[in-house]
Image 1 (spheres, one colour):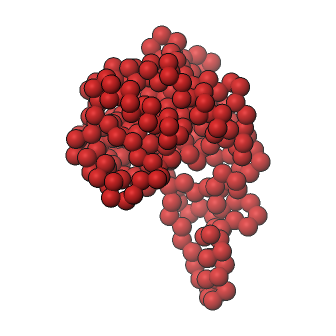
Image 2 (cartoon, one colour):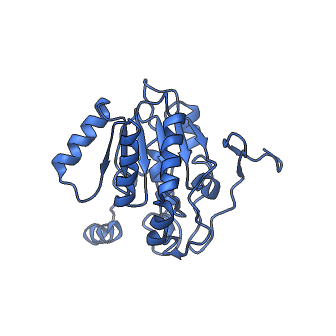
Image 3 (cartoon, one colour):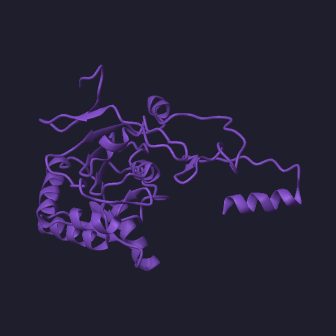
Length: 262
């Protein structure tokens, strides 16, 4: 771990100074990296918000929409701070829901060129891909069992436009940088702020090809955790704050609540 590496380096050099650069200065188990016992860093010397970076044009603005039909998480248990993944896959990988979501995505993303869908599992991804193919959308799924050559070929085809939609579960959550993504679809639900921020980060890159990125949330993640510009990292042992967002029952736009109203 980073903590172990830093301790070993300091044993070799007591005057060693450590500078950390990251977009996510926290861990879900321990909170911020510069707070609490055994913190890796002493303090944060500079912090810039996502909203500021959007205003200055360094990050892309998002247009967020919910849906009339969503993943039903009301009866799911919580395991290690997130929804029980086995239970989540069962309720999310529903044939009728998949049919509705894919048709809804096709309608709402008609003018979007590069779609990315996050699902709850490999089988779920395959079912989504099957429905996309049936309805005439070029697509491919990526999972952890694929060899490097196959994965790189699919990503090349996606970036070139030969494939319009790429589907995955926890594979492209971190480290995948393709600025032209203009439609991000959440067919997954999470309580994890870290996972949520990492997924949403795929939509934030700027590109001359797009003016914004459309986010379609079928898992109520934005309602649960807030807009990416307002997400608060809870300290260790604390619960996330209640978010002042609401979904319009007519158009399903997700908006901030002002003075108790939309």
